[in-house]
Length: 255
Length: 252
Image 1 (cartoon, each protein chain N blue to C red):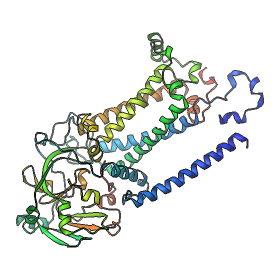
Image 2 (cartoon, helix red, strand yellow; image 1 turned 90 degrees about the vertical axis):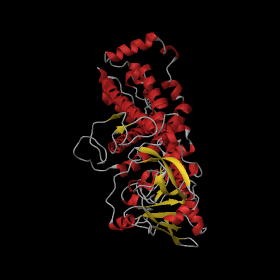
Image 3 (cartoon, each protein chain N blue to C red; image 1 turned 120 degrees about the horizontal axis):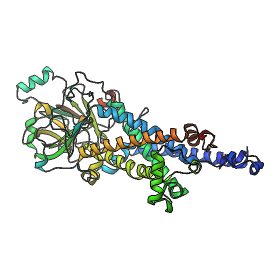
Image 4 (cartoon, each protein chain N blue to C red; image 1 turned 30 degrees about the vertical axis):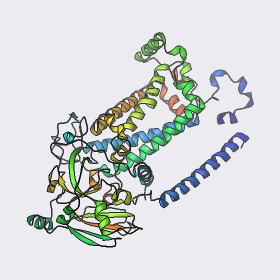
């Protein structure tokens, strides 16, 4: 660790609570975390803009203003053709939104691949993400759930690793939600599905893929909300410092 | 500076230099193999190039999905569009007998085709999806002649790289690379669901490009030009779309 480089030799005699030598998050995790955060916001904003041009959802292969929607989001549209019930049409933002959406998607996929390689090679996946053997028991899980429901502040040990619920949430995002949002996005691409038709038929058709893409995006936003709330509960300053500089807090904030 | 951080700095420097060099080399290779889209300048260039290059490598010969007759949408959506000009109305009044598709540029035999001539070639059909960049879609059966048939008749010259095509509406023109131009599903469509192609769907003649979004399927096509460079057309970005802020390549 780079941080150890400027530690005085007398580190050993410093009281344990004051040692800040160990990184809570490695450089790889911190860098990819913030790049992915940026990508996520770019995808979210551009995705909402694209959605505004047709805030109706369908199931199956096709869907348009002449067919019955599965549901409709009650917002005005940026196209006059869409019957929204509003008397006005929003400005068209699809050009830059589509450019940004796909550029951010590339950045997310490439950064995500680097992260994936890192967590496999470094042991981060095994050590910090996969739940420990003793953790997957009803006793541990129920204690953890009760602690969360009581908004109990995390224990000292959690300054160094993730708790079991946190691990499940991260694993769900990394291995289920993000792959599914990429898959359903690609399943809307006419050229991509010409080469891989099963990518869209398995999801039930092009409009089904679009609807799935929407719901997984909503789920990812919900994850983000919970994630940020938990950071505030655990101590905003110390957790932000840990993800920016890598240094774990000394616990002072929790008093 | 101590040993560890110096080593890190040197390693980081080497990695960064290799990265920059690698990117530069990749860009040159992509350019040579025609994998860089004409709107690759500016902040969206990296994303656009990655999308176009990867899809071109994956989909050069793949066929757009075709559907069964039972999947055809009850009503093919005539999208909103600007009012048609007098020139169109005049030709429409004459039942499009005087409609011409001119073919020029890098061809041995430039000329103009009437609808009757186009219909004299073997008629082909495809039941494909038309998807709009906004998110909606419909499935219809399109009848027409493959663009490649017309290009064969005109005799495309070997250094051709793109085909530019124009609507009677002067604000709507697009272009595609030769992989798309010669693709068997790229049609000059004159029929829809067993009937004449209605005005709302681009009649009497629409370029149908089922592996890209609807805005690349230009309605009311009057001219096709074969070229080796898109620099001379409009602002040189490939088509009217990038000039209006939309991507030239619309496979996604």
